[in-house]
Length: 205
Figure 1 (cartoon, rainbow, N blue to C red):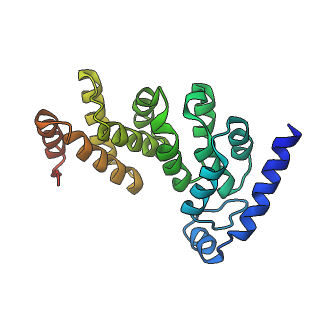
Figure 2 (cartoon, rainbow, N blue to C red):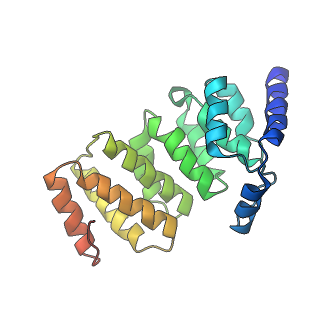
């Protein structure tokens, strides 16, 4: 455990060299208020993660830090095949910002063996980051050609229509993107998507 603590300490020290005050200030201005935020860019963190390789224990330790870069790096280092559903639930409860939610969806959630199951539960939530992750994950699964069953189709379209009329701009954008990807699964899906959107006076574009 001492070794992991040392690693976390070294990683946090390395963030100082990546510091970008302008990026950090811009985030604070947008209300992204982390305890600590060095303003390191996602590509730099990605390069760092690629060099380090996946590491379950290190990802768990980094996620516990209230530091933007630690949380983002944790999403890149966690091996999807070792992420237990219970740990996934804990991380979702602790998502501090839209940025972390989106990085989680792209770097980790979409690769989980139970991704679809979680995504359908999340889009039915009334919480912004849950819905955001859910729609982003489903978008990725649709892009991979994964087709939902009949019940899944109805559930997805119902929740998407609800989200598109909801209060969160981020979720509305994610839901629309998801519907577009859903429509690309085939002509039948396109017709269902158009019909669902038409019911709230929206068009598929």
